[in-house]
Length: 126
Image (cartoon, rainbow, N blue to C red; front, side, top):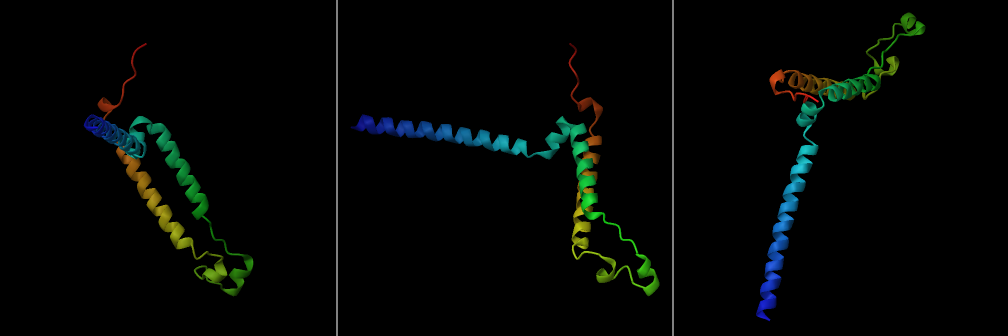
């Protein structure tokens, strides 16, 4: 009976070590998968294209222009008045999101473009 208990304890210890190893490996993979700096290093062109596409999308969502209609010129309507200009109460929030996205894009581009050419992966001769 003592040997069976010892075998069970060894089996539990072995499974615990395997589990710890698997959790460590999964943590490392998950960290690598969400590390945007690594994605920029590996695929700078794709990341710049994604950033530009995201900027265009944000510009389309938040870049509504306000035009005065013919009647608003004649009655002296103020463009800053949201009720009369057609402005949305979400415009300040959309503007803040657009500003944050632009700032993040600038940071990514500066970091991507500041990598020295010597550290860039070189193509192997065929």
